[in-house]
Length: 280
Figure 1: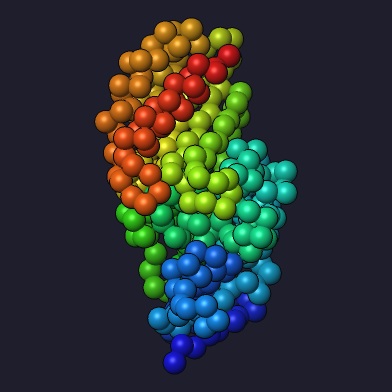
Figure 2: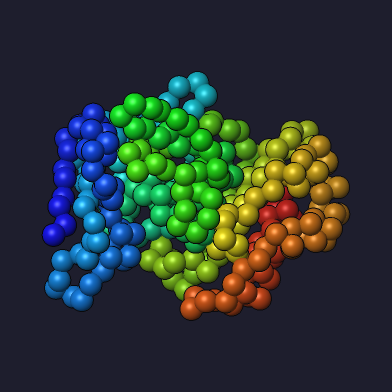
């Protein structure tokens, strides 16, 4: 028989994680799909569950001079409505989820799900986002790109949980997210794209692009971005075909029920082209 625990504080939650083998549930929107059973039957959880939705201290969003801190229990809707949060992330959330899901799901849950098609991951990788991980005796912090090391594979010990998402305050001239799917916010993406740049006096100071659902992990290449930084906007636009050739080998999509690999690759490179041509 599956047992459920509903702690009211973070300390109680960490105590339970230290003494039990538990699956953490916040909004549970991804887990509902992964553990669904026949209609009218309870969710088919295969192990004991820890519900964290009652822990108020995990719902806080606050900032300092360098970072915005988003609690693991904050819903997507709360994050989207908070103006201290990056505009790129707020626009990503608007596209990635329907209102019903936004009022229930959490950003921490989308990260922990570790799906290559997780829409928030594309923008989080681009923003150099980090997660704070806590156990009863330890706190550590790592980039989201290092926390996820494969499909459904995360760097999390059994007695740990995500407590915060930490996002640096970055300045961009323009930042952009695009989801490609059969419907808008209700559908799993065929692919997704996020891009951002900073231009000063006609020269590129910062340039970042990331692709989702086109490899086993989100595709972003800081090495290629460094080759672009320092160029003028006109130089970059004149070099667009060469840049597409740089990125093409990194985009290795698969065929599945949502789309085919050739479509995904072609659209990904077209989105990169459009993004570069939009620079001003």
